[in-house]
Image (cartoon, rainbow over all chains, first blue to last red; front, top):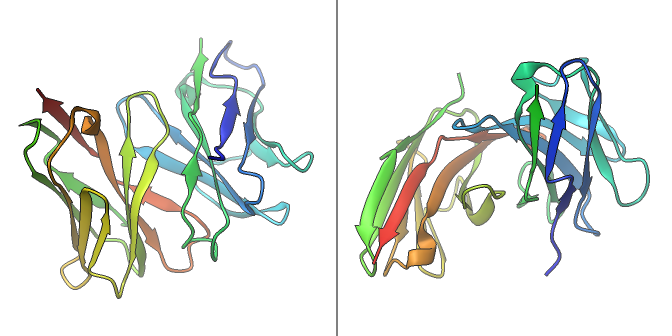
Length: 116
Length: 113
């Protein structure tokens, strides 16, 4: 069964450093998403992406964040200058069965980001 | 403010028993409601999606209900198994949302032998 994959599974970085989190969505999907989950808290929406542009983003997704689909398979989240409060599990999701907002979103296993 | 509240926070049941988890939401305008299962350290897995016009949907031993008038949903698990131990998260999408899912905090279910 196709699944969303994410790399790395765990990333440790120093405050102020740039990190890139990578995701390979399910191959025939059209809609891509990033979410984060701070330890012990609820999952929070960051951004949705369709047709090579951002469809919607949350207040969390400020100028420090960017997303890119550099080729036909990868979907990346870049944090330019990490802060301690960026420490969280970051989930990529993809969907494509229906109109965005009504599709089933399939989540990857997550990347745990630790900022020291 | 769009919010999703779940109860109970945690629940312990014996294997083979049934249980019901509750969800209240204030998301408006409403588009759809989803239930996800999340194992510790893993990504959420979709169980059901219901739109405004649907008031019940089943997926194996999982049955979700939706009352869009009272803005309440429930997830009923029958004949629980040890592998059902996980967090169950109620997730709501607003109309015109471009994929922005609003998550509840989840109910942590433990199934004991």
